[in-house]
Length: 545
Image (cartoon, rainbow, N blue to C red; front, side):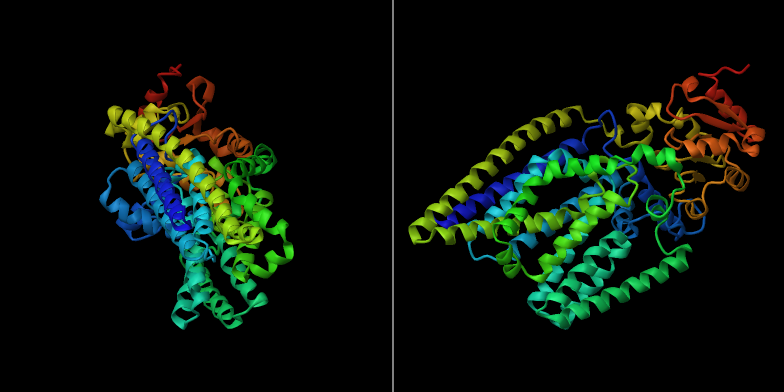
């Protein structure tokens, strides 16, 4: 069997794996589990996109001032056009992350295909097989992100595109290619500011290690200029240099020691999940380094070294310096996945190529190629084939049970665990739009109330809280929310601030969570024009005295 035949077989197996992922995505798109596929915070992107579309302002509340509540401002560029043609906020945000996932995979495959740096077709194909096989094996995790609605896969697509552009610019350092790569690198700030680690460290490695230092200087200057413009725009438009979540999760202790104690172990737990899913991509990198550190250093170029350092620092940043709220499926670590996949594929190709060269002799090289390629082929077809069979059964079942009502946010609330999270959210949402809500869990309420004023008590979309801390009297006096969903019990300090507030105790009637059989308690403003209607809804669980 020739090398090219083996390589074609592995490529076919990779295509089978991609098809299994697509079928799995479709099966999940058509079903609604005990908890929605879309994560609550993802609806923030829909709300900002809608306000930009309808009011021309990137704002949290309709008609309000701009707010820097989104870590990924540019993800709105995906959500907005989808929202223009998809009326359901649930389906729109699912499709937005699915489109981002498809783009991430296509760009990563283009990167692997064009820049594996080996003339050995079996080695190159085995590297691609490693990536696809790992993604298929970890499909429950990766497909959760595909339909989560979050910006995770958008960040992955952005980084895969950046690596591709830098590789192309390094191969042919023309002015146009360098400028395009530099501009794209600078856009990292509005994709996710933490991605600037890659946009800075890769050209810095090129500058320090060479050989084309002029190209590195151009990349750094152009990217730095773009970031400077973005910082200025952020300050002028939003009144703050950085996204509000940064101040809450990285730069302050606004939520208090109790809250932080609940989340202190989550970065480690999620890192274990991440490594448990993607270790096949990491092991070859370690083997390539340990098999010959000097050879690895000599044969690995500056781009790969910068990428590896950036990926490590990215993971360490989220491990030690970020309070990971809603860290489902290791989402904070996933933007580093394109770098690990690319480096893992290159390391695999490098190891196979070196192994065949070490064996020596044409016959020995052929035998080694057949063994390595055959193993990759069998393993990939086994993983992809098994996955595809299971996903086809799931798709058939999903298609038979499909109910389009699962894309209605009110039905999502009623049919999932969310119905015990916010008490009677669907009924409160049917009250006049003049009624103002306040809550720390703002996603689904935002989807159900696109035109209502919603006060974000967590501060993710409220600059005064993010920058100056939570002051219950000020919040209640400034916004006078008619309905307050008391914060999630994790926010113990915010709950205490509210219940100790003179304004709260004088103007609000509090109903305990256990009496409502819900996660969060409810408080009603007695002077609200809608008090009687709200009290009637609460009366089903807590009758009026």
